[in-house]
Amino acid sequence: MMLSTPSALTARLAAAGCVLLALVLANAPAYAQGPLAPPLGASLSGLLSYAREHNPELSVRKFEAEAARERVEPAAALPDPRFELELMDFTNTVNSERAPSLLPGQVGNTRYRVVQPLPFWGKRELRGEVAEALAEQVETLQDGTVLEVENRIKTAYARQFQASGQIRILRETLSLLDAIEQLVLTRYGVGLVPQQDALRAQSELTSVKIDLVEAERRKRDNAAKLNALLARDGDAPLAEPAQLPPAPARISYQSLLEQIRTRSPEVSRERFGVVAAQKSRELTWLNRYPDFAVGLTNNRPYNASDNWEVMVGVTIPLQQSSRRAQEREAERRLDAAQTRVLAAETRLAGRLGETLAAFEASRDKARLLKNTLLPQASATFDAAQSGYESGRVNFNTLIDAERQILRARLALLDADVETAVRLAELELLTGEAL
Image (cartoon, rainbow, N blue to C red; front, side, top):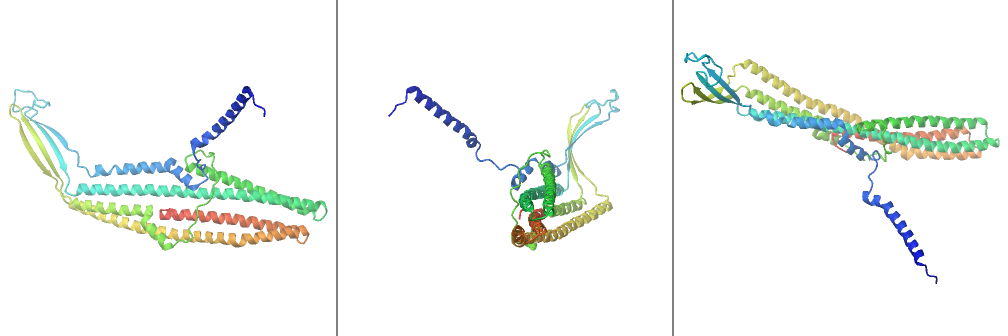
């Protein structure tokens, strides 16, 4: 057995160390970063999470809701106290040896008074409750904006999935047509088919290429819409959509209608409007009663001792006809608010019926296309291809079979996308995921 020299052994160890170091450095980022998150655009949940943090519309509604919430405390607070300074006998008529003056202490009598207005019992609480209901209205407006933005993202994501699917189907069709063209050229080269078949195959290739260009344009348009909703540059890269959200097997109209009545932000906003109108009506009734004020006065006569006074004031609700008109106005505002709730429920119920019908139609259409028409089209194409190769059918039959497969695949994709779009509309109406 031959022993290695010390220099050779050192060289081998150094080489092995370099290899080991390279492997460690190559794998270090993977260990440091952990599992990579899916790229933006691949999943719908990732797009929605990104939009919640970056969409400016949502930020505007959030700030408006916070501002409305800050109005509650001032609405129920006491009015600010009032300070008064009264200079009595500033001409110094009583003290004729002194000249007229506007300086405290240099007149006949100086009064310092602090007055605190006091609303009638219950008015402050009602004002706070009105502000609370209005703040709740703004918060439901924020919830509605979130649903609207998410609906637009879901729709754009589905359209992006549709455009990507069309591109994939058209490219696969191009590969199929290339194979058909090679078959036609081979048979044409030996005189088995006319030149018209070759020209027809090339024409079909060009037509599919034109459709492919249009599909790629639609994909770019949808990517720009998505990026706009995410507050990104229009040409920012987006990953290919992975899959459409699954549709529930059964959806009950009555259950959806109940969700609209209990969870829809639009209906909730109108209901908080009813609460605000009710509290405003109660506040208007309390305006029949007077408000009060208390005051404390410090009198400082010239050349005399200070003394104190306590004052109590009360407003006189004399204009009763004006107050009756305000009360009638409050009643009509309450009637209008209650009617708006009914109008919102009726409007949403109508939209629910239309959207649910379209959703079920798209889902049934997709089922028929997938389970019936597409297998039939595939079988027809296989039979036509075999028949053309053996000379039993003409080229038109083969091309028609290829077009039938293409139409069936595109129709299935369109039906799946339409189902996803209608599902997003149902979630927008009900206010929650289905």
